[in-house]
Structures are given as structure tokens and as C-alpha cells.
Length: 254
Image (tube, rainbow, N blue to C red; front, top):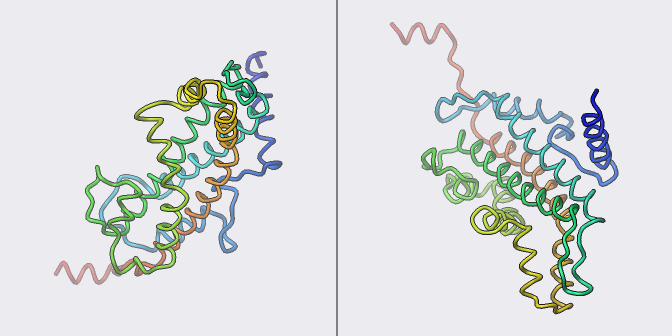
């Protein structure tokens, strides 16, 4: 093993050791009603009829959600790691950025995108089973909720997804849109300090907001894990897939 690889793996272990102390989880870490997540997922989706054929297999869909949740867990652990070393602009109103501060802001920007990706995939999963009337290029989590079949809008599972999206997730993802379409967090917060014009009260609020990212993402992980469970329970409300015995298919052909 080369020195560089050893250094990387040692650092990686330091980051991942925080999973238990913070604590942080991904989809693979949870059990739902005494089933592990992969069994719970496949038991439900295999019993329901997809609206149209898809090239994506169920194991691939599960793995995509799993891997994104692992990314969010890791990026959040990085934020907790770097937080003690970030630049503090609250004392004199200046932003003398450290390398650690730059990495903190960089990973926070990436983590916002990963949270968006997760909910986007949840929208894709719901659209496989519920008729929303959306074409494939218009499937986003918010649009799927807005166009959900009326008969399922009274479901407590749908209402959980809708209320948590409106109250806890929508505004959070709005910052992701700002990152993608306007300014990344590093530039945004650097300029917030400049535009505060050394007003210490303002820079203290900016600093407090900046330091809140690790806990905010930790909370989003809780929503992601529960949202995964609720989405599958909503799919479980659909009628069971109709399985036609082989002999019936033969008689239909005749």
C-alpha cells in the first residue's frame, strides 16, 4: 500500500467512525417492521404492478436509493469533521477563509445536491406505480405529489410525504436550486460577510447559519429514512399484482 493510499484510508476511517457517535444512518442500516430495508423494499414492489415496462430492475432501483443515502451520510460526517475548523467571521466581520472552511462549504454544496437526488428518485419510484399523467421528462418529486391520483390523497402515507415536503423539505431544497442556478455556498456566504460591511451582529447571524449545516443534514437524513419507509407503505396500498396462471394464458391464445 502506498503512503498516499494509507493516508486516504486512515482519514476515511476517521470520518466513518463518526457514524456511531453522531449518530448517522443510511437505508442499509435500518429495519422496518422487523424486516431489513432490502427485504421490505422487494416484498412490496414485487407484489405490485408497474404502470409501464422499465429497463431498471428493482435491485438497481434499491441500490440507487441506498448509494445516495450512503453519500449523504458520508458528506454529513465530513461536515461534522470540518465544522470545528471553519472560519469564524463573527468577531471582526471579515472572512479570512481557511482550507478547512473551503472543504466544509464545498461538501455542504454537494450534500444539498445529494438530498435533491434522493427525493428525485423517490418521485421516479412513485411514478412507476401511480398514474400521475406526467411524461418521463416531467417527473420530479414535487410534481408527482401535485399530480397524485385523487383516491390516494387521503392516505396517511401520502399526507405524510406531502406535509413533510411542504414543511421540512421544500424550503431546504430551495437552497439547492440556488446552488445549481446561481451561487455555490462558498461564494454566497463569502459575499454575505462582505455585504454585511463588518456589522458584527449580521456576521454573527451569518456564522450561526453557516455552522448549522451538519445538524440540518442530520435532520434531513431522518426525513430520508422515514420517507423511504412511507413511500413503500404508500405503494403497498395498491391492489396486488394480477398473476395469470400459464393455463389461462393458453386458453386466451385459443
